[in-house]
Image 1 (tube, rainbow, N blue to C red):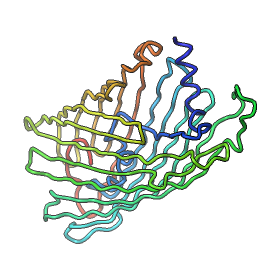
Image 2: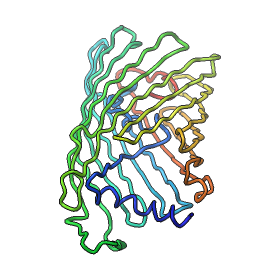
Image 3: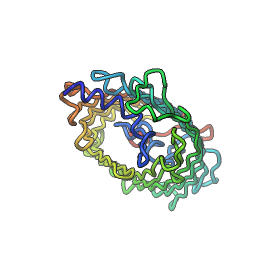
Length: 329
């Protein structure tokens, strides 16, 4: 049983490229807030500050086969804003790299994002943002370890270079001092680029639709409850993530901010994730561990993946850095 599962994992990288009806999939993380641009480009620049930089790393299935490794890096900026902060332009750069299995199959994507924000009140408690992104991706694999059952099969290339486009919209609403919500919708791979390695033209990276919703309710002055729901649909594949975090606010002074979060997140039918993070001044340090509950659990001994993430917020020069909702948006 274990050998069959390991063999199946090793073939994942080739099933897509060699099938006429293949459907390629994008990367995913369990920590939806640490890399918000992965879920929606409209969150680029969606924070109180001048810039934000982040890195996230994920290591998955190391107990079963060659680890599946994913890394993303982001840089975002608020480039213009009105005198009353009623509207603003944001810009972002998002880079991802994903490697899987013994064939080192994976993809690298670089995307540039431009976003626009409009506040519908003077205090910035009701904000709508829209964004467009454009970039390029390259996928491929190493040919050294390939063994083909059908000698007639051949690869025209082992690398594919393609353009990628996406769009998103997000809404943030602060209803009171103790309750806020944020909701986002986005679509990636709008152009469904060709990633064929055999010269075929019908092996494409399918469109991916994302829905994200997060809320926070201050149960007590120093305690917040934050439910979260995320849904992704890519052709016939879908992923539902839901759960909640608890945030403890120890200090909320602008120059001495300190908070801790802990949460339990379920990726429906696949894994249960424990999420921990520390928000200190302008830094966010996050950690997550996935316990595998899918059909692979027998071979993996329920060991899934771990993630680590770091965010740094650069404050605006023209005003003091103020405390933000937890987690930072």
